[in-house]
Image (cartoon, rainbow, N blue to C red; front, side, top):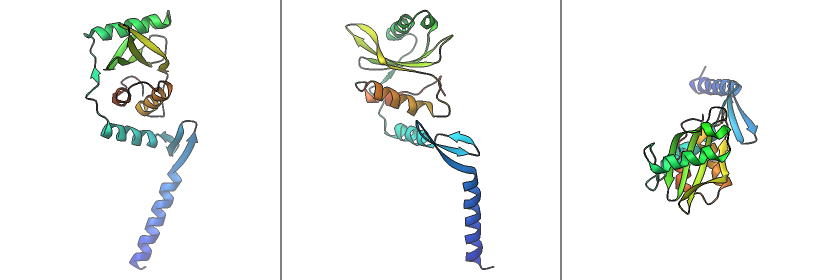
Length: 169
């Protein structure tokens, strides 16, 4: 067999084998790549990678448990919808100007990401700026960032871009 014929047959065989294991699955949130039936969020990976390369987090501060705003944010979340919210524990918190973005764990509720804004010296939860639930099979960061950006268009883009979830996967 001539070399170019063998290479063509090899390439077509490799393509056929790959295509038998790969399939695009349309869903409500976009497309997932199914590899032998296991869903992979390729679009989310591309969005996450692009975000990491383009974002500027110089105006965003990650808060620690010692920060006064951290304690105020925790108190605001616990008071938002008692009694279930009383078990809130902040896992992470970011700040950009008067805006805060917190990641919250509860005893009996799903993990949440909450946008807040300081108004007249008090932290207020943005009513439409709450994401809660699981993200699987989607990549958490791009899904949550885009949801919050759609829900609260006035939220600082740099705050959302610098958000890296720790709870939700």
